[in-house]
Image 1 (cartoon, rainbow, N blue to C red):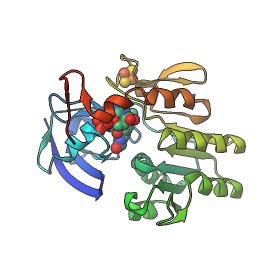
Image 2: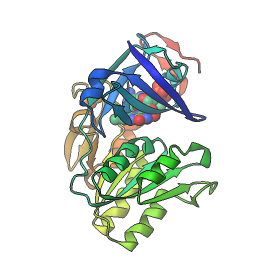
Image 3: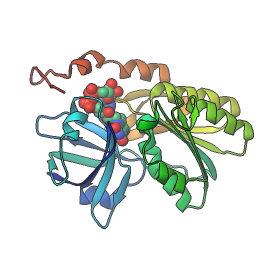
Length: 277
Ligand SMILES: Cc1cc2nc3c(=O)[nH]c(=O)nc-3n(C[C@H](O)[C@H](O)[C@H](O)COP(=O)(O)OP(=O)(O)OC[C@H]3O[C@@H](n4cnc5c(N)ncnc54)[C@H](O)[C@@H]3O)c2cc1C
Ligand code: FES
């Protein structure tokens, strides 16, 4: 059992949890993820490690409540327990040779670029952050992003805050200005595809984090299969980060829709019942 040491509601559908998991905290690094189950009948869901504290033995995850399992998790309070948590899984982010990077986070993707922003700053590198959200209420950790980055740009679809438009609008302006040696983009698949299409034209290296459907997280089930550079890769063990210019996004988008019908009903085939939200 893993205790929720701290719960912090960031907005109406996003919650940050600091969970006691000393063995994971001891060895994890930015870009890696955990898989957790809320209770013993629960589904396994992957979540990025947004932060960790080796001394306290905790890992932090930032979770958007979008379906049955994330809803069940959102019902847990501080001091309560979740059933399982395994990690660290996947490979750490490698922005080692980037000196002047643009980090792009769309929606909950900003949870993934959040630790990388601090990491880049700690290494004395230049970091520009673009965060995109549908509306102002969905932005998270604005003050921390501002403090950790050299330049911080907010884009909202509805223009309720920052500039109106998509992250690619801001990214294009920066690329036209020049001087950047890499882009790290995390968000919905269509957003990452659009970012890669743009950066390819400028010849700027682009890393993306692939949020494929995962089950075991250890390379055995094939659920997270992708095609990268014409080769089959598994996001859980080969990724989750890949050279975005080599990813077959159309295939990834089609695969991500496989369970849409069941997810809409929150229906569990094992138990033969729907989860009420
Ligand atoms: C490596 C990785 C890191 C992630 N990090 C975060 C994070 O930091 N914060 C966050 O809020 N979300 C993160 N996600 C997405 C998160 O796993 C899904 O939101 C969650 O599984 C949804 O489960 P649900 O039962 O609440 O929703 P459902 O209604 O079951 O699904 C809603 C959507 O979530 C995705 N999803 C569902 N099940 C899985 C699964 N087993 N594996 C991957 N995606 C799934 C699908 O796109 C689906 O359409 C990450 C996914 C991956 C692969
Ligand atoms: S999650 Fe099973 S192979 Fe990656």
